[in-house]
Image (cartoon, rainbow, N blue to C red; front, side, top):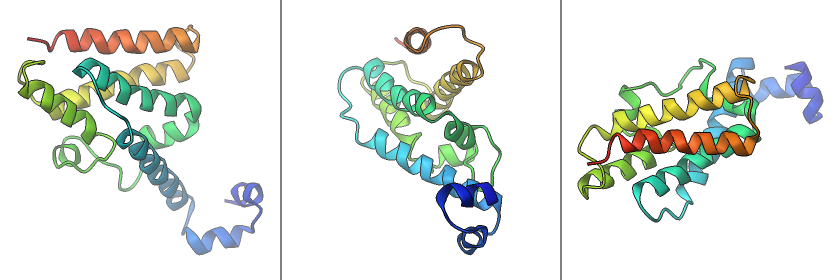
Length: 166
């Protein structure tokens, strides 16, 4: 807490007036990160086919991860109190960052663009694919430029979606 206080120009005791401990501070940062991510996703002008719309949403997550890798890690990889858990929270629609993907998939299944299946489960699998690739890239396990990695990320989405088409 002391280094955080120094960086923002306040005393460590001032932080404790707002956050009981380090875990509470980190939880608040993660929650704020999710709020910002949800806002970015919700302001998208989603148009076109299912692939294009899902790519738009996926790019928001990828942009956030590449721009703020430490926050991304805190949001998605660090166990924390109140973090949403699959399947309970996602099936109940409790994730503003996840729900848009589910809605895109539901519509694509309803219109016949994708074969009928469980849209929540597929959204979770797409998220796992994306997060897995991102973690490998951020961890230095993908020897590609950012541009090359973005292309790999998109190709992976397309391959997965091809298996869901009618």
